[in-house]
Image (cartoon, rainbow, N blue to C red; front, side, top):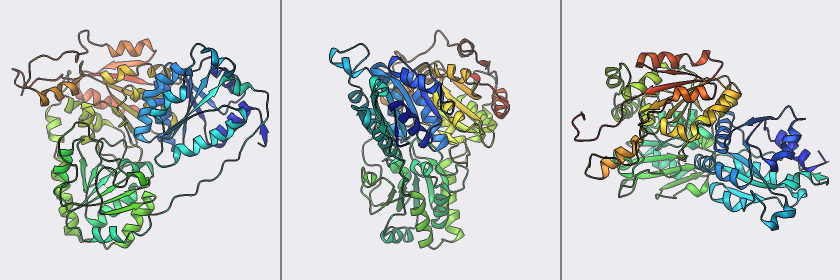
Length: 550
């Protein structure tokens, strides 16, 4: 398109960038876009009734499709509501382009209602934020935004577009989309090869860069070549190694002392595509034990040596770099692989027997409930998880191999899960989606249920109902002598009726009465053509030293 009106240029860029769905909540400043979409049936506008839900849907959609998600927000208030989703996307490195309508430039000097400094508001939550000041600049700014969103480290890019920019009577040039050169393998791997060749007890920390770059197969090949025990990075957002593989030792806990204890059993650690180790709770000391040699691989040069010293650094595309290492190394013998597998098995432990012994009627033991979910999952299911304490149990029980089968955000902005599940299913309608949500988390994003019903997105929503902020109670237990009281950490009474909440939005729901019932309901996910909410009552937290503590 050599020349076009500003709004036509916007739509043309969306099409050529592969956008098929626009997630948003409109206001007056978005009316030029809304009007133009009436004549653009190839671009579906997916309405959210709250901006966090819109950004979360785009996040899930981008991860499911491997393309940039596109979001449209409204002025300062809409941007503020969407900031949680943008913070999550930045931490999880989800590529998004988020646009927001700014008030008409001709009266910004008068501080009109709903206006504000959108760029300043969005900057801390995004890779880059910019406001379009001339209609002729709009196409180039958008092209740059889409390219920057996928450039390592991927993430959300924000563009503020004043309302009158889209309606200006001017012809603008639309630059063609330039192809991106695929990144290659890291150069000069000799030092890394020598360290890995000499390792007697190697370990690999599999970061989310592996899953994002589609390098799971190469990671497995290297682990088997080295005879390395493989750990997921703390609070991994996706599948970066098949969690049923014999060399898989589970997720490293998000505390430096626990990471240090696990890695102390190894002499060489290969860290691949992991953003530091992002600890949750502070513990003194480093994550890497003294004397352990570290090799680090990342497509983002800024990650190398960012929080721990490395002995060999490789910057390049993760898949090709791992493949080059496999070619340069001789496979170890079966005895070495068996030793690594034995250590992995010891690290994982066996929760299945413990969970099965707790099966029974509601309220369920959290471990039994998560086991029932894992046991009932169809082989091709996608799990979207925002369950905090129950989610940690679920991670230890899941055995998933397919890429993009597990979706989580390390960003920690609650209310993301419902929208992300809707976006995941919209992005890949061939795979059933099961969302496992804590009741506290779900309350932050409950408006997303409306979009699931509006567009008949057949997600199975599981609300793990313990009626409390359990993770905070457990943290208090670890940090102080227990006083027998928790202030501000209970959601009951009144007990939340999630079936009634679902009915309010027109969604079918069921109150789960047993672990067997839960497993059967999860197994039925592939046959659904409408969304379903399952309320799963589970036991609440039992304080230490109480009469009912085990």
